[in-house]
Length: 169
Image 1: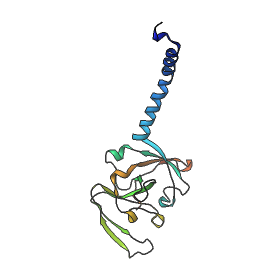
Image 2: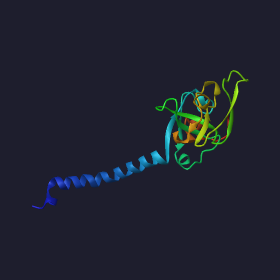
Image 3: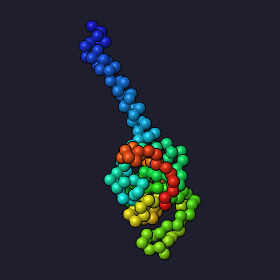
Image 4: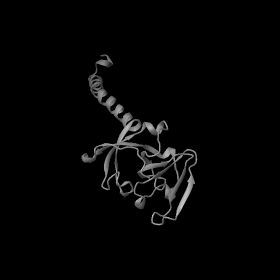
């Protein structure tokens, strides 16, 4: 009897042939989610009024960060330098080489400070400066901590649409 004629070999080949399309689809979806575009839940008080306190489902472009196409005014997902387990949503307020002036204490209008952003870093701030832990607290963020650029809101449906990169900071 030939080994290819054994029942277990036939069953295994048939199972493999049936699951191969699903494995291929899963690999394609994983690749797209990891390197091209994914969804994320953005929430918290730091980006009010752009993003709601209870959370918005947004689409995240992963290609822009890989090719250095982030610019001032873009909303980005960043791995928090203060807590690397957290992904935070902020707006880019300055790129490498820029000088950024900010209020150290938002309640004191005379407490401004100017910093020059070093090479390979960006300055991020929340739209709601009264309730945001951002570059004013932890300094400029290395470009390598960028996870993606938020470009589209999916939910809530009444706010469905593009998130423009107009600067609000």
